[in-house]
Length: 496
Image 1 (cartoon, rainbow, N blue to C red):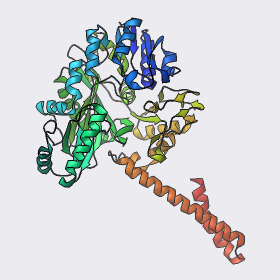
Image 2 (image 1 turned 60 degrees about the horizontal axis):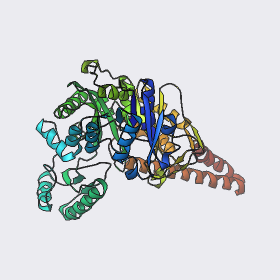
Image 3 (image 1 turned 45 degrees about the vertical axis):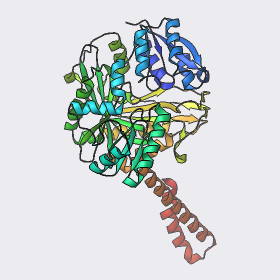
Image 4 (image 1 turned 90 degrees about the vertical axis):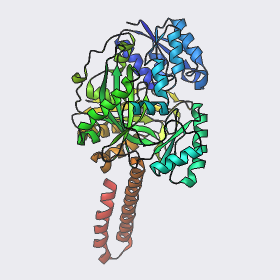
């Protein structure tokens, strides 16, 4: 086994990996930018190396500095976490050339699956279902017009590289196609260094389902089931769960989507942890989207329901070990939900809210897990994604898991900066969420329902105040009616 591993990341995922290394009695090396000098992952690691200014390009994305830190500390392997260099084929190749193990798939697999268009072509080749669209990147507007006319509007333009909604545009008619192509390509170029875009049919009210795969370097590949990731803001997930309510309603879907995922990943000789993402329509038809060749933010929900520690296995696989788990050994028990706790304001379109955390207290109790990278007194920097922690819960049923999450969110205390914790509490009470009636546009409808509830409550409070005023200033004959209106409106509104 490795004696020392460098963690090329920050925040809660760096803390998560360092804890796994401690459990495996492996020395950990943290790297940090100037903005993260007092960060929790730096405090927890056995060694820490400064790698540059706050800007990611000069620190967490600086390949030379990270490789030099690994050589200087004698680290035999690098765990990239997610984000930053985790899906950078060139970095994985440089690690290999330097004799440092990259804890993840081969650089060749990253290269093959890193392009959405290339991954789509691989899926088609192995017979996996894909959303109807262009074959490869679009060459010119004329090709885009022909493909769109063939599959029918509305369509989506998407960046071939990257994700997170960057370089994505909905187009409802041919009149808007050319300008949307320019915008999507320009945004893709600035975000990912590639202006390549492709086109696919827009599926109305889709669900976002992903399959976790795990493979060793000896050709053994299994899937660990699905995660429902339909609750998104700006095309980025904020609530995930396993199992998917869709699979609970149609259990055969797990095996169908799982086998499609294994065919695609197996065709490129994939090993280590990876995730294949699919869209599912309201009838349960599913279509391959892309593959993330790394550990996912939402991996804890899979760990909860399978009992399999993905980070431990990532390290063991990178060390050359064979998987001891057969597909038939995988069992899914209970239900798990994850909420991504951000320093952001849901009332201001989820705008980031960096600042100093004055007070911090995590929830606890049975079936509650917090993967955090912050503490009281920590200044949330403006330089990075404002993710503070991942709150996950497990219970025997989805209904109980929802109640447990509602309780845990209510116990979580983060003072000094605005967070999305109250927002999660409202989601856990929402009727559509509780019914599992989900799609990627869920939050739009939820916010409308939430505003209507607030308007109704405000109207009741106003009615109660008016009734109280009538009681105070009205005639004797008006007082009984005023009391009745106050009870009907005021007490109900103030107690809820």
